[in-house]
Image (tube, rainbow, N blue to C red):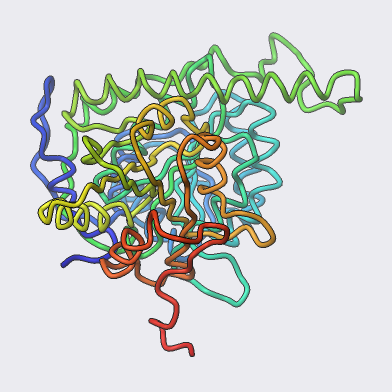
Amino acid sequence: MASDGARSAAVAGADAPAEGRVAARRLLTGAQAAAEAMRQIDPDVVPVYPITPQTPIIEAFARHLAEGRVHGEMVHVESEHSAMSAAVGSALAGARTMTATASQGLAYMVEVLYLAASLRAPIVVAVGNRALSGPINIHGDHSDAMLARDSGAVQLFAENAQEAYDLMLCAPRLCEHPEVRLPALVGQDGFTISHSAEPVALLEDAEAQAFVGPYREEDALLDVDRPLTHGAFAMPDAYFEIKVEQAKALERAEGVWAETAAAYRRLSGRDVAAVEAYRLEGAGRVLVAMGSAAGTAKDVVDELRARGEDVGLLKIRLFRPFPRARIAALLSGATAVGVLDRALSPGGWPPLYAEVAATLAGQVRVQSFVAGLGGRDVGPEEIHALFAALGGAGGQESVYLGLGRGGWR
């Protein structure tokens, strides 16, 4: 039985494309797959600062640059705060801008990420999701992304290396859309995806570039021929309205993502919709999950379905904006819903659980499960334990899965 992220990208890319040609599959890590998408997009500016487990993304992209396969500017800065600051300036000046980070690096970026969203800077950030210190930990969970969840940025989560490529390729088309114009974080679980190799189907370069399209330089906010003030101080008579307009832009991103996903499916044959319903037909007990753990959950769902159990999976790709209406519709037939978080919100409910519970608003029983913190594997044992507990007694507190597996007693 496979463990975290085990369902291969070959399965994820198995559908034949309705249009276009798909290049032969290549064995790539998630980091390399993200860098391949960046190579095909060929951004104008990439400010960078290394941090594990994101560093291989930028290393692979730097190799493409050294070999003349991309033509933009890679800017080596002194910190992640500086990387996002440089990204904001280049994006507002009319340059297609991408960067990458992880963990404490994202924490350092968050101050400027809020500014990027409020300034409507369409920056794509590849994130190797990793635990936040302390204690110091370099392995994968979603605590870094959850720190940024109220920044106003779009947030996407990949299940495997194939989706790391697909989502990175689709992200610029979303965040540069004139109805959106917001930064986007594309997360892949640190090491589980970023450093694990799988077969990945790539589009031909020309197809990928045509899908993303050229950067609309006419949308640049900084224009010497149209002098305007941006990022000025906002008093109470203006701040509220500005933030509401920003929130509305993020809400519009859900519809734009649906259009983007439909276009990408026509081109590639692969589905990158906001949510994925996996064997929900007739499912009473449903697991909701994000990231690599969803791959393991699919294997367990298949196994339990073969035994006649009424289980299913709802995988979340788009976490911000949270696709509430679609999730409520897909879970309307469930009798019990278990939400698996790879992050904590100390003193409150875990982040994904809080969103799902609020979305269902008492329509169905929702239980909270937490696993995989600090990179601990979310294996079939944890998913089996979750389904065994789902619908039973309790539910007034989170259930922690896999405690003790790491040697701690």
